[in-house]
Image 1 (cartoon, helix red, strand yellow):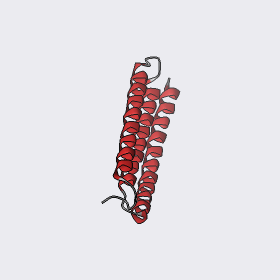
Image 2 (cartoon, helix red, strand yellow):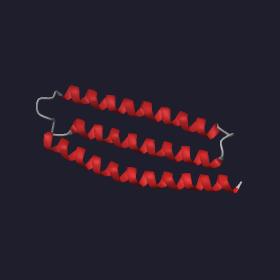
Image 3 (cartoon, helix red, strand yellow):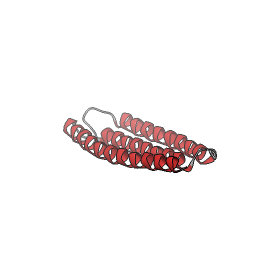
Image 4 (spheres, helix red, strand yellow):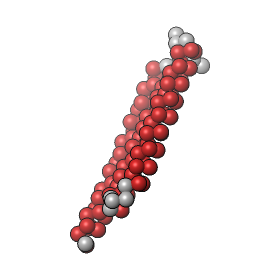
Length: 116
């Protein structure tokens, strides 16, 4: 069911734009990951932290793209509000987990550096 008053061509265009933006971002992330992997001078703990942070960023952006696609298909304002609320809750939980994991990586890096 199309949102009332929005032509299907506009919805199709919005969906295509979201998908193109996702593909462009994934290309950027792939290039950044290759650059990180190629940075041989970085200590392994720094590489691990960068890899984890990039993975988190990729997951967060993918979640935002998924939300955008759902919003484009939303039937009404109530569905939009429900999607936004669900997204906010899941992102808060994800950010808490990500902060804990990055904190653990940082602690490991500090411990490793002080042992040397």
